[in-house]
Image (cartoon, rainbow, N blue to C red):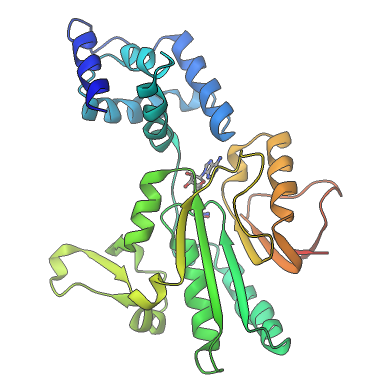
Length: 291
Ligand SMILES: C[S@@+](CC[C@H](N)C(=O)[O-])C[C@H]1O[C@@H](n2cnc3c(N)ncnc32)[C@H](O)[C@@H]1O
């Protein structure tokens, strides 16, 4: 990366920092994002992409955005390394604890009693576009809490995302304090650690819960997913919206292969399944059960 930085500094030293991103480079970037992570960018996202790349360029000490594009597309090993940072910069990672709470109410009231009735001893959950892990830790809290006074349950949560930065965040389990608000008081007491110094304005997920969640980089565009094939729950929320219809369908077909019969799939509230090509029955709004 040092080589990349030096080359970039040398090349951009004489160039104009105000030069706008050229049309050609913008469309090449869109194409790259689509090829690598399936995300469909449009003109509307142009200023967002510009802003995010300029932040990345400051770290690399590159002043001209078209020079940055030259580096990204020059086919070198450095360009391959930079691709990871580029993808980190262009993904949108907004998430929250207890986001779309109806899903967690369904989990608590309908799925977990079923596991208990079936005498399940071990269950697996996958948060398949996990961002910083709020969704994965929320699922862990709800499962842990339900089985706390019912003899416990051996469960694990896999949290995957294409963005490396959010995965590091999730592993650390460290969040800004404004994200605390949706976590119910009782869950905060059991699963959240507050700093001794409130001026730090952050909180950490308790170690016991952190130990249940594993973070791993996984691109939903991969031909095959390096993940188990017998998940009881898969969350795939608020990521399909970034994909076009053929990509959405391809991802869903692959994901279904990782869900055990009777397992549940949760999609985001603005996402839907169209057509009968999936081995799934709808059991509630945006919640599906594998046949
Ligand atoms: C808006 S966040 C949703 C987070 C969480 N599921 C939720 O609903 O709160 C979307 C996440 O999808 C990830 N993502 C986008 N394209 C992806 C891909 N091809 N493979 C894996 N993750 C991807 C992004 O990095 C981002 O963290």
